[in-house]
Image (cartoon, rainbow, N blue to C red):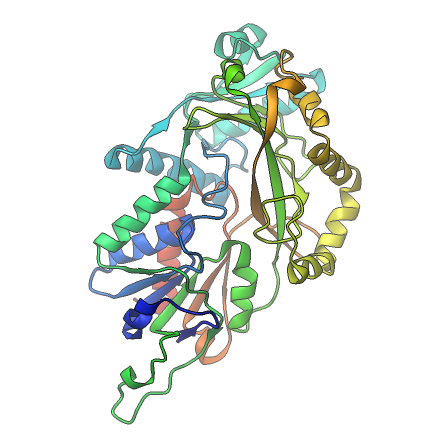
Length: 425
């Protein structure tokens, strides 16, 4: 049984039925997993619970909108395999549903000579990952693809695309509902407990309107995955630490500067990919993001603050170690977040014509970064189960790292396999 401490809508009496499986979390991973499960098991009853008024409003609705091709990931790793499969599944799904997308491609550009060996290594990795149509191009090739971009050498990935991932998430939700699934919003799960049956074995008489009764629970909590896990007695680790990424946007009259995605060569010394140019489905162009600690798990503005989130993050030994190991990098990210001219100076390495007058402050996203106690970024998928009678009936998706949106349909298959294995559906 799931319960909430929050006020519930008047129509929450629908939750007084008993379901076979409840999925907690209405982001893209939760929705894709719920969809996959109900398509596999159409005779079972499913309910999806989301704490917000609308679905997919956090990480699934605050991201760069890129369909990744799988260049960066260690060959043979789970991330590499899921991204490769997920990209193909995503394009097939978008075509089948008639959802808009653009296969605008991506350049990973070396602007310094010392970046060229890393770029070549990245090319070899992409080849091993079977990234479709990946080629190495020279400075002339860069100008042919991106007339205003300058670089010494680049990887050209024409299979990379862009899409509105929130629109895709809502399509998953529609599939789930059309297959018979129930979606309830404004329901924040706050507890999990076993239901005591009446003498006749019927639980219908004990529903308070704040309870959802089910045989099994799957949680896909994103920014709150660690707290959801602790409800059922799991370890607090890995801990979720929120990192906010602030974007700049090109002024409309400067959109001509960018045709497709333009990325830097990643530096292995730093934990994130670096700032990049990303065209959007609405025609806008985003530049960024930086990566700074957010003082609120769903804090999209510079001054958003939540005392519990702040204390949880700063008191965590893993974050303390991460900060000490990347102090200069972190200070630089904060500086560029405040003084956007510093961010523009980095972007000018790729498009020299860009100036401070060409950009405006844009939107932000918050990334649910899983950290272990040693300050390492948890870069793989983590499943967890609780303890006791409740724990044996709950499966938590503790970490679904980027590119989770691109890989969502492939991830959903893996999650559904795990649910079937653990619960013998």
